[in-house]
Length: 233
Image (cartoon, rainbow, N blue to C red):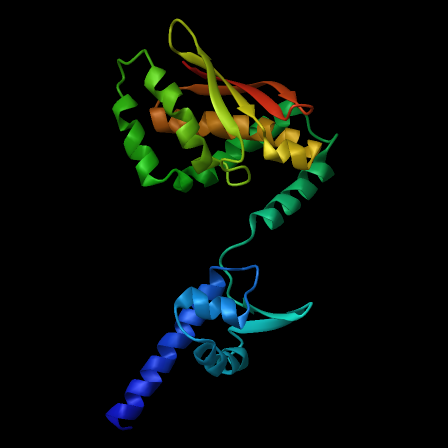
């Protein structure tokens, strides 16, 4: 193989890889034009390599109306809507079979699998709180709403979290979650918060090396709000 031919093969492999990677990052499907624009090339280039990707079964195509969309067969991103629909089905199926305490116990178990999702950046920001003599956790309570999205993959930031109050001893805080999108989707998601109260307590107990309890005080499905308390013992 001549150097010129080898260069062309290598360039083709690079374009194919870029097309495949871009489709993995866009699981909703893309047109040839979308792909070309996304990876900074022409429609001609994408059209040239698409048949090879189809033959290698790295992508597949689907007619949607007047458009032809391409999808990756190796998608590593699942649309949040799909996750929520699947989870909603689970909660609906369990409705009436479990009580609040049961959901909380499940949350404790879930927390064991969620520890890796507390990213290094989040861990770094709370290291200063790991003082065995510390009695005030005001700084942690103020930082809580920044940490929450790291541990709730179903409801990551789809609401407004307000710190309502901190006790005089600074060991207990109340939060109100407003405009909770999950509650707008389905009332079945009420049980999600009982489950996550158990998970939050377990995760933050590990993080702070203190016993932490999280309680759901009230869930209002009319104004889509959740009142939560967090106590550090």
